[in-house]
Structures are given as structure tokens and as C-alpha cells.
Length: 214
Image (cartoon, rainbow, N blue to C red; front, side, top):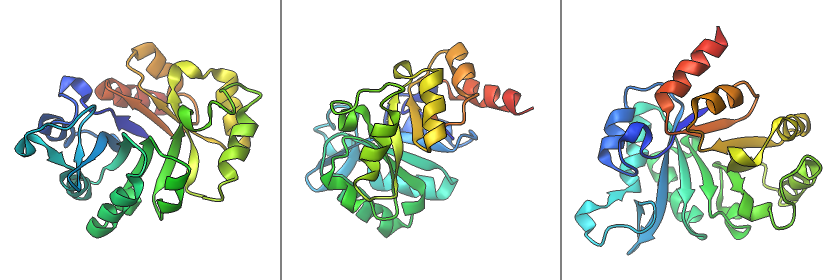
């Protein structure tokens, strides 16, 4: 799967320009950063605008994905948001289109329902830093929560290498990589059997994936 990072192709992160530009592209997913302000779920990277009219509601994003068929990486920016995001997804009918990354806590996992999560390194890294030897331990730790929709890990591409990715594949640990904005690195990582690659260079990634498929 290819995910267009928020603001891909210099469109501006969490902006309407980003959504307008992504409509015609052929990746599988988009990415947004999620906060909750005054009981409303909105998208913003660090802090939502103080001016309500300038905030983009998450409802817009889910309705957009329903219309255009994209999945959406819900990068929650603090713990405790999963239950609210899932409730909105259920209301709009897009639970099959969202996956979580970001600040997902152990307590949040029970609220995933039918949605999917890839756990950021902060979730497991203090116990089991990323290494070839720790891949089975990371998988066992994630499995210990008994939540089958925890599919794997979401980590920076600089944290992995060939041996780590092959070990993850061998043991059935899903891997989502962010944010690969170098053409050579894109070409390298697109050749691995991993779940997802997130990039700002979505046009180049789509082109490379098509070339590799020939």
C-alpha cells in the first residue's frame, strides 16, 4: 500500500489543497493528523487553529474517503482519541477504510473495533528496541494484547534494514514505513513485501511501483 503523507507534493499539510490534489492520484491511502477540540475531531499537525472556521473537521476527511475510495491513516496526536475516531467512522460507514498510527495507547486498543492499528515505536521501543533479534519479541508483545487488528509496527524507514524487514516478514509482523522522501530509498523499500510506505513524493512512488511491477 502507498500512503500520500499529509501535504504530499507540496500541497500543504492538513489543507483543502492537499485533498483537492489527491483526488486524481492512484495511491491507496491518505494521511491526516487528528486532534479533538471542544468535542469535535479536527485535523492539524501540532495545534488546531484558534479560529473554528479554519479547522478541517475529520468528518470531511471520512466523507472524502468514502467518495473517492481512499483509506486514511489516522495519526492520532494524543491518547484517548481512538474511541471517538472509531465512533465517527462507524457513523459514516468507513471503518474498513481507516488505520491508526501515532499516539495509540494500550488502553486505546480495546476501542479499535473493526479498524486496524500499526503501533509507533514509542509503544514498544522502550521494552524492545528495534533490532533483528527483537522482532519476534515485538510481535509477541503486540500479540499479548489479544487484539488481532493490531497488525504490526509503524516506524521511520531509517530504523530498519534488510535483515530486520526479512525477519518481520518471516514471523508475520506487519510493517508500515514513514516518511520516505528520497527517490533511491523509495525504489529500495518498494521492493520489500511490507504493508505500507508513506511518502510526500507520491507521484514518484506510484511511478516506481508501476515500473517494479512490470
